[in-house]
Length: 476
Image (cartoon, rainbow, N blue to C red; front, side):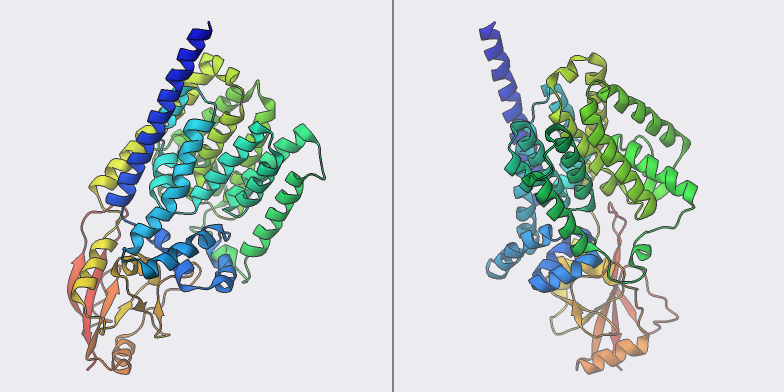
């Protein structure tokens, strides 16, 4: 019997190390040699690079994200100033470090059945949305997984710090930290403990750092306006069907809810009741995060698949907290593996698309500008929001009007200013040049910009359908 157990442990260890290194090598390959950084990835980098510490803190309410990702990026931006390495590689390296830690915790520290780990290995959110894409969401997963690890080890100090840091990642990190704090408190019932104190401090700092300071800020960031009934159904379908079974129905954030998506969402609710019926203590935190995420979508920001995917990540964490006996029930094991397989199929499709298609046309545009347009020729951007990733690959700032100042990042609630042709000419004369280049994400209106000449367009097929157009305009 002892020999059989040793063989089983050895087999599990081989699977875990193979899974970890295979996942990590795949991630590194796609991130460094394939993936093109999108505007959301460059945005945080430029905020960290072009602002000081105080300015970053005061800017967080525009971003809607706490400070930890920006603070983490700061030393890497300093490195970029002294190393002869393109900034996209330094940003990618910065992200791959916590991503590697996440994969290690998942494969080596979570006591999940090998079949479950294998089925989740290439899951869309774990490997692509939060793995390949260089965003601060990776810290949600890292501190969530650490919190689960410390919970199982009954390391209260480690748990306290993990919950505090989890609150500094995203609003979804706050939901998860609150739910895990409630789970711990129901077990321990120690109101004056470090866990409660650190969680409380984390919640307070989160509110202070990201709470909107402008009237109507929340309304401006809500995205498309929906009737209450539609908003409720979109929130339900997004946080369930899109979160756990991506690809089964069209993306809810783009196409709205549909009958099949709602039916699948209801079936998932039944499925989770089946999974947790014998582990009610784990169902409580899972239910809490589900309710908070749904209410957040309903009341503040409907979100998209990137936000909804946090529910799937929390499911992994809760399953890792469970007793392995949970999976002795074949129905539960098969249901969890089914979710993992659907996730991995969608994850493989996303990786395939990223390998075969650029994320956008920003890199091609940026490298063209870097190679062909002299530094002394001003490049004026129409729509800062869309142009930011081009700046990343050009490695030079563009100008915006009406301020006439250089920029690299944008404000989410800022209105798009479209200058007149005369304003552009006046700016060129102010800069003492014979003309300038205009970059726009759409073709310019020939009636409004009659003298602008289209010099180059970048409209090749890409994942995000983001194209760019370069115009020249004489100052005369």
